[in-house]
Image 1 (cartoon, rainbow, N blue to C red):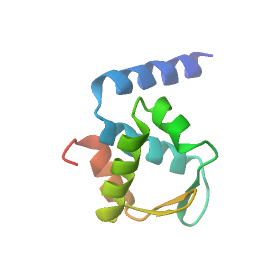
Image 2: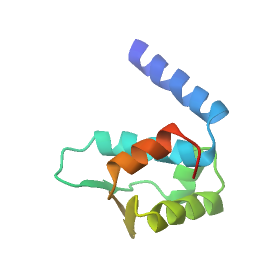
Image 3: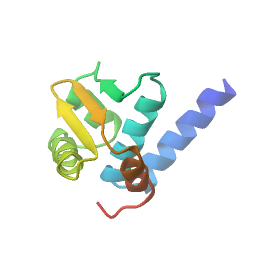
Amino acid sequence: MSMRLRERVAEIEALSLQNGALRLANFLLRETSTHDTERDVIRLTLAKNVIAARLSLQPETLSRLLRRFKDRRLIGVNGREITVLDRAGLDAAAMTDDL
């Protein structure tokens, strides 16, 4: 229960202190850390509008950020699959707000 409380506090801090790009980068990194595959592939089980709401973003903003990450070759997007192509770059994006 204590672990869940810490996770929720961290989530509230992220929503209130980070911009959308940072929240998305951290979300993608959290999702890849739960998979044990050779490649960091995330299969979205939720609709993008639900993910956007969870990250406190408009769906259009989520789409623009995914496009920006894709254009910078940090991720690849194929339907409901997101492949992390540059984990170090995504880590850097999660630490700064220069996106």
